[in-house]
Length: 95
Ligand code: SF4
Ligand code: SF4
Image 1: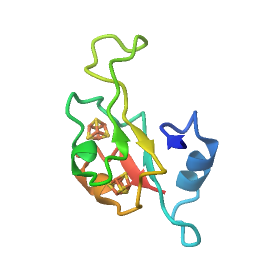
Image 2: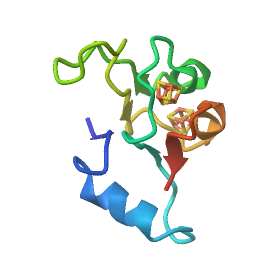
Image 3: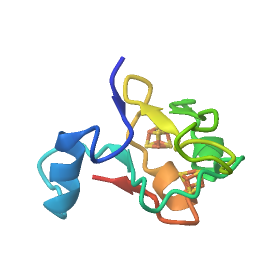
Image 4: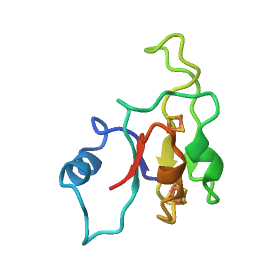
């Protein structure tokens, strides 16, 4: 199972995001931890028909927040881009 969750955890995703438009590779969803509000009900997760988003419990490192950032299971993801459109914080990017 392969997961992308944050630029610090996923150098490849960070490199793709930093490179701007990616015309050669299939785009994959990437959750930007600096923008994600850790909402109790992730709107990006709600629209994913593949159930590729995995909502997380609260993080001990961030007390007071409802949840940690969601993870994305790329083995389920079909690269449709609906999650990017659904996140009101623009925290999900197809990179
Ligand atoms: S909808 Fe966006 S900001 Fe809210 S929890 Fe999901 S990824 Fe984070
Ligand atoms: S790109 Fe589509 S299939 Fe992949 S996580 Fe986002 S909504 Fe789900």
